[in-house]
Image 1: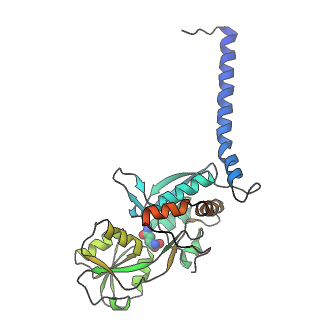
Image 2: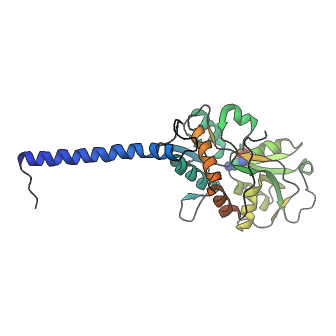
Image 3: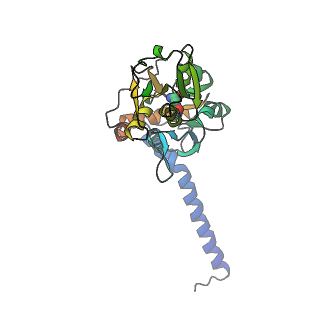
Length: 282
Ligand code: GLN
């Protein structure tokens, strides 16, 4: 048993306290100094997100971009991308699940710092929130029952029953079809299920999500028809004027240049990524 007496005890205690404070101080400055060293823009840049924990909204019903794995953890292409950007820029990621429909509002209100949810960059959204440069080339597609032959494109959906996810670019697209009866759901799976059940003639969804549902065998008896309806790009959104956007863009550049992005893309899509534009042609 160790005994400390009088002054000696206090000396030991003060020394231990001093060491502890030094360790805390070093830890606090670590992300900043690491980032300044590895940042492509070098010294003098302002790594605004470094050392922070960013609250990242997501809706884990959008495989393979974000979904719950068998262990209950949220995983996917988007999650790998934001974690890698965080690693490059020295910020932590705190995922917050919410419905996609409420996400733009949450960003506008500033109750989250960003979102990873396959959010398409659109002119309307860009009026109320900011977007990073594009990180994924996407587009919408129509799914119908395998036996169907009369639905071949958007025009042939006239007066038909179309299922879409609420608050999405698919919902906007469906509104362009005259006489269509549109039903809305909270997730792409529910949208596709509506067609499987025979309650809707067709579903409009992000093509990559529908293809992944087919590939994983979670939905049977459907096929994609016609051309991809739209050319879209996903961006990483922030509230207007957020100081974190610069870090997010720089981190995205870093992971594209060092091959991390291509590695993640191949992991989820089994192919090389396409070249991304600097800005979305919207
Ligand atoms: N990309 C589509 C959109 O932004 C759908 C996104 C989603 O449902 N997570 O509207």
